[in-house]
Each structure stands twice: as structure tokens, then as C-alpha cells.
Length: 455
Image (cartoon, rainbow, N blue to C red; front, side, top):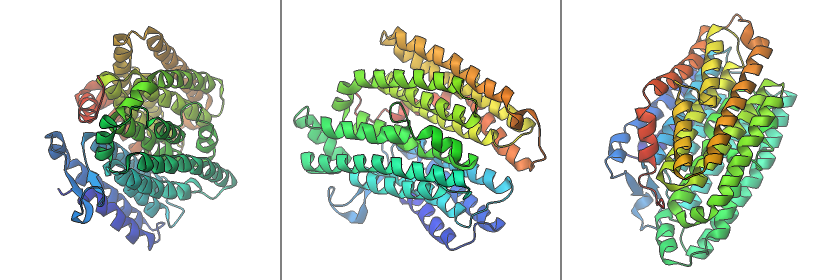
């Protein structure tokens, strides 16, 4: 499979869908088929990426630095697979849950998938920003889906805050070019190894802030509770389960790969931010009565775990960060979709996703948190290991208080069977990964194998 396959397919199909009425069943199924085909095309790149020779090409056959380098290494592919799977599941859910109410919804979801694929596959800092903005533009439109007053309020908050993050990111890209004279990521790596040791600290700090806004960890979390509470459940699942992956991927790509020396110096700060986010999110989740706010603060806790893993550094810490991001993506999607509908399958899916979020075996979340605990203990950070255990207990209490309090889970409703099937499939994926964790563990190890990780 050529690299341009999963890059080009969603763009073409999203443009075609933009001219169609997404409220028609066959148009929605065409969007679903587009995402499924993109998922298959990406999966076909795995053997070559895992062989040690990731597929790449420079657009237009121009020299590197003039043409844009596109590259699909294991980190790119695992993020693309999980994000596309989340988009596919949520689009299926929205279609079978009662019908899509906006003609543009399927095309926007596919456009979001196209933007995310471009973000994960590019090896050029400015092109990263371009795809980043294309994905955000689709997300801005999706945030208002439903067109109720609260949906529009969520969209306005989301747009204003994330435009600030985009401004920080563009400023960092400009500073990278002025400092290094190139925007090709591999060329920036070479410059950093030969250049001044502290020259990249300022753009690195701006990138931390920009991706912090996207990921939503403390103190960049302030938009998350309002947006996740007021957006529709499907949109909240899209934002938390797919779009937020830009934040963790960006920190891994620019921190561990492009500027590992900056990441090494920032480790104490990342540990403090991660610990603060873990504690803040866990306590606030326990204090909230609105279920969507509980899930929003649980996502802040999850972001804190990823940042703490980045702060630990080394191969074990970064591999744990990848595993936490992948498992957390499915956890959040299942929770947001399950809380939207009653019924036995939704109750089971919510329970499994809650156990995974808290790190209870046998779930995917257990193995990702166990990896973080191992990395923390190996580094001698027993306080962080204790904080992770405490956060797991508080998260479990908060999520099951919401389970007991809300009618939408305690009382089954007359629903389309497909809605329960989607969330049930997500919960089965979490349990299957918990019972056979090797794919998740290998994804974590191999995804950071080619990065410029400091030991």
C-alpha cells in the first residue's frame, strides 16, 4: 500500500460527501465506508513500518526542505489507527442512534479524519500546522452539531480557546524556522544535535503550551468541562477520543523526536504539571454531580497521566505515555457514548470503560497504568506511583457515583440495537486488550523505537 493511499482517500471522499445530504442513510453509510477504507489502508502500512524502513516520500520529487516530507513510522500509524477507529465508531453510533440531523455531519467527520491522518503522517513542522488547522476547522464546525443553545455555547468556547492554542503553535513554528533555517523535522533534529543547546527552549515552551491546550491537562484544562458538558455526546466522544490525540502525539513527536534535549530539561516541570493534573482532575471529578462534567475531569486526569509519563522520560516512560494515550482514547469514547443511552449493553460498556479508566484488570487501562507505575518505580518516583494509585481509586468512585445517580444507565430505554452494539464493541476491545495485552505493549515499545529518545 503506497503512503498516499490513506492520506488521499479521506480527502477525496470528504469533498464528495460535502456536496451530499448527510441526513440520507446511504450518504451516512458512504461516510462510514470511507473511514473503514482509510482504516484498512493505514493497517496495510504496518508491515513496512514495523520492518524498520517506514514508508516516506517528498512531495513533487523536490529536494528535502523544499518539498514536504511525509512519513509513516510506527508512532504515526498507531495513532492514526486508533483515531480513525474512534471516528468510525462514533459516526456509526450517530447514524444508528436515530439518524444524523445535519447534512454536513458525515463529511465533517471524514474531513476530521483526513486532517488527523495528515498531522500524524507529516514530517514537516509547517505542514503539521496546516493539517492541524484543517482538523481543527472540522472540529469547530462539529462542536455546534445539534444547534441547541448549549451546543452553540460549547462551540464558541471551543473555538476561542483553541484559536489561542493555534496562535501559540504557529508562533513556535515561525521561531523554529528563524532559529534553524528549516521546517523539516529530521533536519531540525540534525541542527539540534550540532547547534546551541538552549536555542530551542523558547519554541519548545510554546509548543508545550499549544499542545497542552489541545490535550487539556492542568492548567490548560479550563475549556474542557464546559465543552464536554454542553456539546452533544457524539461530538464530545469525537473531541475527547480522537482530536485530543493531537496533543499527546505532538508532545511525543516534537519532544521525544525533534527536540529530545528540550524534553529532558523540561522533565521536572512535566512531572509537576502531570501530578497537578492527576490530583486536580480526580478530586474535581469526585465533587461533580453532572455526569458529563465527571467525564470531563476524568479526561483531565488521563491527560495528567500522559504528561507524568513524559516527565519520567526514557523509553519506559514514553512507551507508557503511548499506551495511556491509546487506551484512554477508547475509554473516553466508550464513556461519552454509553452515557447518552440506556439499556443493558450501555450499562456494561460504561462499567468496563470505567474500570479501564481506573486501571482495574482485565482491561487495557490496567496495562497502561501498570506500565506507568513500573516506570515511576524504576526511576525512584514512589510519590508518583502512590498518586497514580490514589487517582485510580478516586476516578473509580467518581465514575460509579455517576453510574448510580443517573437514570440513563439504571433504566433501559427503547433504543435502536445498533447504539448498544457500538459501545459494547468498544468495551469488548478494552477487555480483549486486557486479556491479550501484547498488541498494546508492542505498540508502545515500537512506537517510540525510532524516536530520538534520551536514555
